[in-house]
Length: 262
Image (tube, rainbow, N blue to C red):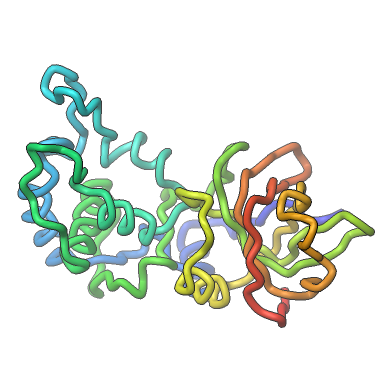
């Protein structure tokens, strides 16, 4: 029977050890320092507190928000459900490119530096109870730092926008899958991956999932999947769960490497 789900080792310690061995890090593994979080708190009080409140819970009173609508909480179950199975890099990018919102006339805050955003991520992690460690959270760590529940990764629901990396394999003529894939992770936009994204995909440790690919025809008549058989590829699209199958309705396809060893 084809394996459809990643089988986790029992126990948090064993799970953390597996992540470390594969190069991935969980937010529960001490990925930031207290010093970074303290700096992040100072940045938060300058740039974020007006919209997200002192305790990161967000301001829910529409009368206080004027025309800008309610803000999402940055901690607790709301934060976790929005960000689980995503990376610290996605959170970094959202803050860096869109926070504080540039269209708000009351926002008199200069654009945040990369260092300031990393510190803000550390502060948000601290606010969610993720433990501090003895090594600074660095930009190069962000893509491999996964936001997830303390018990470990959990399957994303159907219709999540995701990406996955694995080995292109033909099941039968016209039917394709990726093998050796890690669990799909969230993406915020279905846009063409950057060169950094492709490099990160090439470095992505393999897993043991098999994920069906559907609607490859969406990629156009010129797309020839046979030329990518055996390649390490990245797909982005819509996750569809119909047990026992896991499928991705493909919207974007990237050839990562001509060699793939699941």
